[in-house]
Length: 245
Image (cartoon, rainbow, N blue to C red; front, side, top):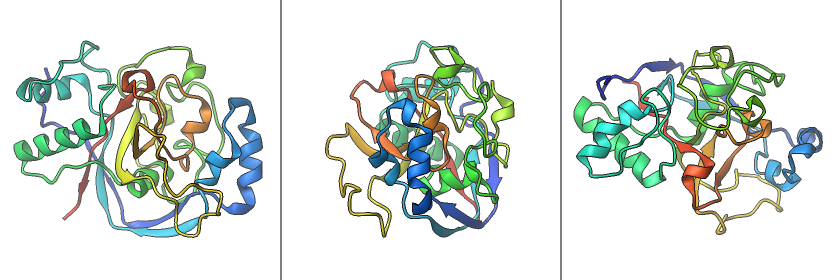
């Protein structure tokens, strides 16, 4: 088993994130994904487009694997996953994800945490305002989403051509990834965007979608919560972040 403290960190340089979606593009985006059944109102949560300055940070190249998670599970008397060691841990609650980060921090002496929503989007978009981690056009076969037909998780890093500009893998598909950010409308959001999502099982923002999700969740701007109590079914996983000195 790999050492549980061995995380492959990727440095994302300081820069400006063009976060979200321009209001003028909302109708076109909603129409482009109408076949997925996602209502226009869900895409409106991406508005308005805002330039956000971010400091440099580090993010794990892949989601946390079963091998990395298992020692934590044993130490804290949580269920040990039965999935293969090189697959991402799946079905994780937000509280367990943050507990894992804290557990790892005590073993490494590093301030390990979950990424913020803005950090996640910056790691996916890079500097060129791309629509997907790999570019502006959706291409089947670059992520473990429903159109891949796998129907379950795959070993992390199985889709290297879907890497982000910084070489971060699996930002789209495989498992849906928790961020540290609770849901709230962006400042200046249109009035139809809900102030709260009280119907969600957990309102912390997740990003990227899992193997059962459609291509709309591969978009760098797409933000959502955990809307079902069966976290295993919706494939929630963990990616780690770390502030740089």
